[in-house]
Length: 319
Ligand code: KPL
Image 1: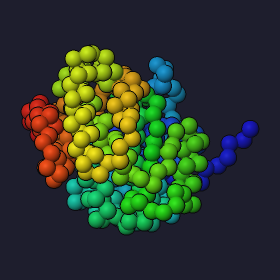
Image 2: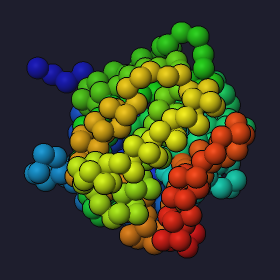
Image 3: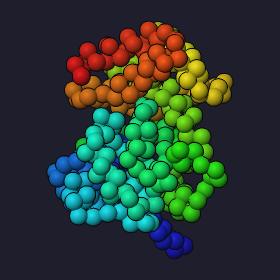
């Protein structure tokens, strides 16, 4: 059977765990992928060696991709109308200068899909990116970057995406093209017109798994398997859920089960916060548990556990 050409190009800003994992899966299914990196060294390594993906315990043949630094791309080129731009960086990268570059290169693109953890980023991006082209996304897939051009796919999850701010009607032509590319790559995708709620659900997951795995120094799977750690998970989960419900998250009754199932699905994964702590990098604690503490203050609810884990994680990295 001949492969149908997929006329969409995906430009991924950020070649970390998620960026590399999605780039490899999309590129091997025939989607044109361009990675925009922070460093020249990583761009060169990707151009020369492609991306090596480890899936189900086996390293697969490298997938060829094209890469260039964000700096060089923004200086001379712009995305075109059929291009999707995916933002797969940390909240700490969203400086004014960085967002200006993203705004310029994405100005004529089909859409800018934002795959960041935490809260607050969509509002900041909304202020500089034309609203019609902005999409929020949450991923529950597990990925672990092993090197500049190698990544381990540690757990199957879903990619949920939708317009930001909320728009009537789920799918426009650009989304349909993207959905086709995602389906061809075997990426389980959910289209949603309530991304504000989805970001809260994801925040609830990250606000429990990320700081506790960072503090205990364990994988996502090891966190929930230990009864004492699980007790602390439950207490932190309940505090976060109370705050998020007061802030407008719609209740759905199975948030705790969903959290446990993410731990299981990504059991071998080290959370992004644990990896940041180990590498001495700035963590996203400010936008995850710090974000919940800020919402708690606004809604007049105490948040002692969120305040405590924020203080401990900050002490671990002194950031
Ligand atoms: O998003 C994640 C992260 O590590 O930041 C989870 C879902 C917890 C997977 O590790």
